[in-house]
Image (tube, rainbow, N blue to C red; front, side, top):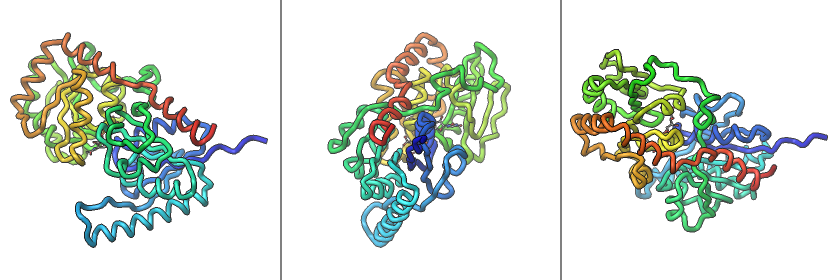
Length: 357
Ligand SMILES: CC(=O)N[C@H]1[C@@H](OP(=O)(O)OP(=O)(O)OC[C@H]2O[C@@H](n3ccc(=O)[nH]c3=O)[C@H](O)[C@@H]2O)O[C@H](CO)[C@@H](O)[C@@H]1O
């Protein structure tokens, strides 16, 4: 008689930073039966591969302070816990993995109340609020950056890095770059996390002419929300709202200009791509600055506060780097030195040890 596959619920929702690591991990567990838990109308409805059945619940975060709206949210949290419990019981799930964010709360409470193991992956250097609250309840908390452990003293933490899609570490299995960038031309890639960064886009468009004059090409991933996304036209400039083949792009790039979401930093490290990092100023508890500091602490990148940066200063910083290929190379090597390329395999091993083989 063949053994039934182990059933696992993947609670990962919201942004690329939460979804891509979960997808990369799921792909390392082909013998498991994985179903997904998300929220209606978020990126998971678009990004989660069709092979994983997607269940959705509605969850919300707490506002600052504690008033009627928080009581309402608390009521909703209790409702979501009941929904997840029902799902876990009906589906005979044997464990839960979550990549943090609001969905992690009800998933952790529901699973632990049923005695199921929960593995939480926290990719940020400064863990999110939900992670800090729920980490002590989890069976294991895997960290993307080891500095995060100091903020989770009561949790069973283990530093395994953040899983990346397989083509990031095995270029030969990925599609090649299908953009018209001539071989040997310096390439600057600009991206602002999975949703784009309008403020960076504007600075880049103003700075770009001097970079073109220096021979550089730019691939600019603008996100969907930039009304001026098509305002710059140049033969060395390619602008797209979103690009699927990030692995080939970052492997080819000589320099990235980026926000400092954990997913972006992890991929830059795995690809050994030097970067100018501009943390999103409104990120929860300024966590993108903590992330960027992991890079700057080993000289793998330069960090600039958005409020201090002008088009002129950005233009000059990039020109300096374009003129110093050796410095770019050294920064790239430093970035590689902090990468854990086989994080997905390590996470899969942890899951098998706690949920079952
Ligand atoms: C605004 C904000 O609060 N963002 C947070 C969000 O991630 P957010 O999704 O904004 O950013 P991340 O840097 O973590 O991930 C971006 C992901 O999108 C991919 N990508 C991007 C552009 C594109 O065209 N194609 C593409 O595939 C990147 O390759 C990367 O895998 O969750 C992360 C993990 O908790 C946090 O660290 C980020 O701070």
